[in-house]
Image 1: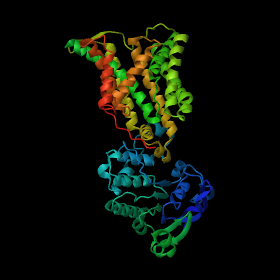
Image 2: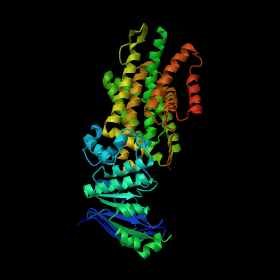
Image 3: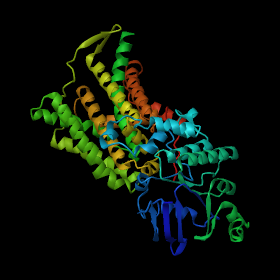
Image 4: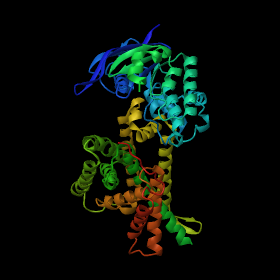
Length: 247
Length: 291
């Protein structure tokens, strides 16, 4: 089993306070790794270091064995690392379909085809399949900004999959989504995972969502990993209950 | 009725030119938060590029192409590199003040280095009259209208039907996301400046035969484009087109039917009404900005 993502002794401090304090883990191909932890435990900082939005103070990140520490987000995107956003990010006045095409287009085509090439960049069919898969075909021609919050979350996920990524990092996909939409989103993510053997890392607060979706869970507290294992085992772990579920 | 049609068509022609200028204005705003107060001078200048090329012996059509090329370099590339890029990092206001300074520089340079006199500028087609629905319309107006419509249509097709066009729209709507997705945001912004340069150069070639090429032309044109953009909606290309056309038609009709003395006041009255009743413009969206 090849590790898709390897994080080694990653540290990030802000003004002397270590937000991430020596975190190491790896994600194997086809895994869905959940990262949970109380507010302020360093989840988002860890995520941002992996995604190139923050430069870690020390430590190393590798994608498919290749060192990516400090790489820019767009270069990581080209290497097949894509992401969804905690705070929604879409192009609000462009159609849902165009949003999907934009999410995939920088992965193909030459310089000439960019300037005057057809607008769908050969991605029209892929976009339609993705719309179909996430049950968004209905809204294909509507401006993305007119969708409901939950639908935009689905679109956000669909955009992350457009380029056929190696690794998808989902940043609180359940945040602010109602329960019906949430189970739909989880079910679609599982279906995608089953179909493509895709590799995910999910940061999430919503316990049920993580427990149902992930194959392995990692618990962060105060910038360190305090527990790791199968969802059911982590849930029973007294250290985790103390730090996170202990209310 | 005949005179109404005549006034309407010449108004549409003027309005179409205003629309071209206003479209460039709103495009710059959308992709780079540049409010270009030198936009009027940007329209004044290319006519002098064309005249200079003709003085060197180039035929009109070649001179027009040279004028557009010079506009691309000076008003597109150099404007972005020398004025906008260094100033924008200090915020919108310093940039606005810089564009005002640039407008003065362009105006005074043309006066000093070319001429303070209004220069005759060759029309695209020989002047003749055409009878249309019983009205006498000049070929000039029809050609201006045709070229302006073709330009806007080409721009519309490019923005909506090509990959680069869509990337430019994406850059305008959410630059942070566009950057993460790997869209070359800076290049898209540069394209917008080049598009604006072409639009003002075409507007310059269309309007100079009517107004003559004069260093002060930018004053009225810049104001007209600014008002057109606000009336139509600052953040919408089609708003700028509508605003420009309303302005051109209104100007002609009010001068003929209401008062030629106060013709300059009517656009301002509409401007005030729009700002009071619909501040986002007739077709504009209310802007929400995230910080």
